[in-house]
Amino acid sequence: MAEKNIVDELIIGNEVFVPFLTETVIQKRIVEIAEEINVDYKSKLPIIIGVLNGSFIFMSDLVKNITVQCEIDFFKLSSYGDSKISSGEVKLVKELNADIKERHVIIVEDIVDSGLSIKFIEELMARFLPASMKVVSLLMKPDSLKYKVNIDYIGFEIPNKFVIGYGLDYAQRYRNLRSIYMLKD
Image (cartoon, rainbow, N blue to C red; front, top):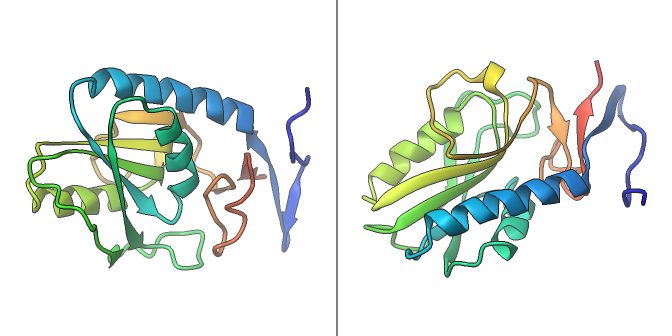
């Protein structure tokens, strides 16, 4: 059966994006990650915190597969603006609504590339004294890491190339694509 809404290539300006991870492949991996979380948090009540805007689709699909009781919150960071390259400065745009002191926190990210945002999140969360904190990221670019960060659950390790779709954007567009597309060489 053919994947829904898959195109051979997307042309955005003068750049070409090709299919990289299909919706089926993504969903299969999400179920596997959720199963790990279900085991790790069997007798706990974690609070799952999404990093907006990119993580919202991944987090939605992830929590649908988590069977342990959990709470959900979001915060928003900014480090890219409309660029494909991080500005190198992370700003907190929306704070948490929940009190996470002595709580088991699971941070949900769409992608970890330099590690700057995760480093910022680790420092931010430490101020609130959670009982534990783990990070889940759909994508990770190990070759582009500039900071030593710990990612506890990784969906896919990918090359250091620009990707869009499934929550990942290009100037706030293309998040709604069901699959992930990679910038063609």
